[in-house]
Amino acid sequence: MRLIDGKQTATEIKKEIAIDVKAMVDAGAKQPHLAAILVGHDGGSETYVAFKIKDCEEVGFKSSLIRFEDDVTEEELLAKVDELNRDADVDGFIVQLPLPKQISEQKIIEAIDPRKDVDGFHPINVGRMVIGLPCFVSATPDGIVELLKRYHIETSGKDCVVVGRSNIVGRPMSVLMSQKEMNATVTVAHSRTKNLVELCANADILIAAIGSPEFVKGNMVKDGAVVIDVGTTRVKSDKTKSGFKLKGDVAFDEVAGKCSYITPVPGGVGPMTRVALLKNTLLAAKKEIYK
Ligand code: GUN
Image (tube, rainbow, N blue to C red; front, side, top):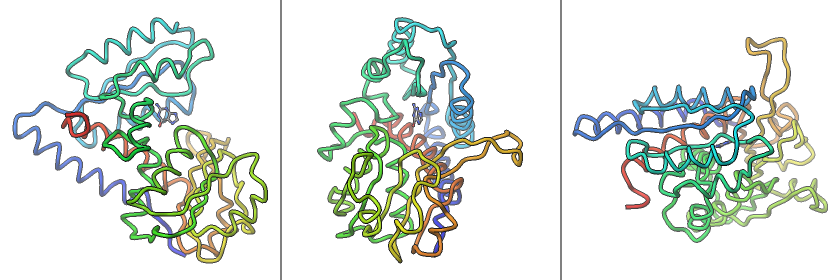
């Protein structure tokens, strides 16, 4: 079994981005600028946004954090989205999800200018991805594709099972794996799937994006399979400084001995998701997707 080191790979890509940014700025361009809107004080969202801001600093991007309290109205949030859409200094921005229940996430996502939608959540970007046009791809699936490529993992003709059909991970992941670049034969499994254990146990590449800690057990993995664990459930822990630790969707100890490659949690997909957002912001700053 070989561990897929997302942390190390992300560090390498961040160095590549930093070199690119320095060359741009030395040539007279402005610093790429990512803005993040954070609503409320959810611990997970606070942590993720703090990481995104730190990542920007590391590669030489400018970043802005815009905060609202939990009781923000949809109108106030839409007004801020409109302002960022018009702000020529902001290359890309994200609205950290989830949002409080008085706000329609879909309405907010659709208000973002697709040219600045570095999360790749706007239907224009999702649609362009589905038909293989240049677009901002959702960060987690993009990070996973990058990992598979950098580890030279054969995907062509392989049977790939994606467990989970979320708009952010499972569904875009299944599309990317089926496209010409990856050439896998893809099945999307979900809560109504029959014979899930057998289905997973026949997969050459198993991508677990369910959000249920240690859902994938040893009997669900074929000998020699490639296992990608997207799970990041925060559970309480008295062993960490933060009081939390991340749990993956895969029972690592049961599965690791059977597979050919596996991503750990933490240190697998997570760091690649973060770096994919930086990649999209750089593409936005260079106007490489929408000229
Ligand atoms: N919440 C969980 N993951 C994400 C993400 O990738 N982007 C945003 N905006 N919110 C999230």
